[in-house]
Image (cartoon, rainbow, N blue to C red; front, side, top):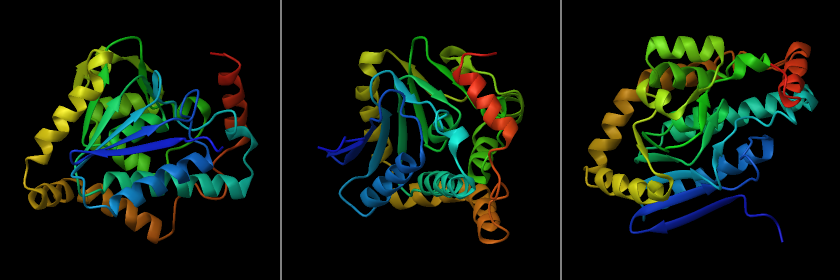
Length: 253
């Protein structure tokens, strides 16, 4: 039987989507496309009013799969860029409330996934957060860049994007990247409470205000992708990036 890597459950008007690609919910091409397809599929359903996205075990999402990154040929690099942009744009532009129930580490593309949600609840404990792309020598896809610019303060965005370090949960909360911290056992219960609160807002008004707030970032994404296209197409993973990714995997500094 094929592994169930994305689980969805609709209960009392809330859709819970759990990412379950062990061990780290790392984003390879097929997993990105599966998540995007899952969100597109549930978006067709009108029997839910809020979406919660969480991870399995103790990791929310570790970002792009570094084991596979150095092996990607040019066609695969372009495909993963398309998959990243499609997923982030779809999630960021969803017209209903989206809550990230962050059960552990959220790194690089996994942190962008969290930033694309409307409200971010994380568990207390030893998780790490950050946008570490520069550490493996790759630039940000246009969607990831615009979401980070829109969702982080300029000072925090500069530090996260340019220097690529990771920080602990309390620091991420203090810097505004997280909205709320809860004990691990309370995560999904609190996420459902927040979903119920957001469902009480008139849905048409919520959708319009969300669109107003996010229109500048989404307009830039769509303009770039419909114009000259994603700037990183045709060579996202350089030899420098391959070497850096292998070094990170080997535990180098």
